[in-house]
Image (cartoon, rainbow, N blue to C red; front, side, top):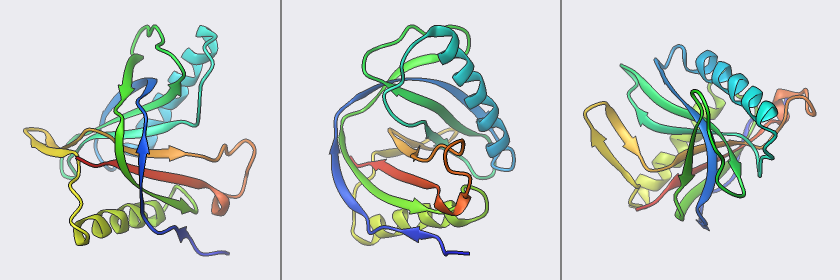
Length: 170
């Protein structure tokens, strides 16, 4: 079995991106299950709507509260605004500078969690200013993203899954 890989962090400029997503309020223990269910619902909406996605799916961690409820939005980017229905909402990922790293390895287990911790630690050590604030619900972020670059339907080996972490800077 190959070990998980994490690329060195880098700062990149990103344009704003339109997206459609579903906000999930969940505990950390139920995060994976609840977000996967929301992703299934979102993919059904996309298929029914006939809209064409413009990139890989993502999870946007809007509010992090490890002891309470997390607010995580699952989404897909689009090249133009879309008209949402039901629990699907439209939004814009903000333009700006992002600190990024790429993690290669399984989504389950602690590899992705470890990669996130390394990116945050690198940012803190290098005194980056995250676009985040304290809210009554927890640690709120303008854009703390996990981009799921690998489609498991095309790559069955979880050790080869690629995930880009992109955290917006202030």
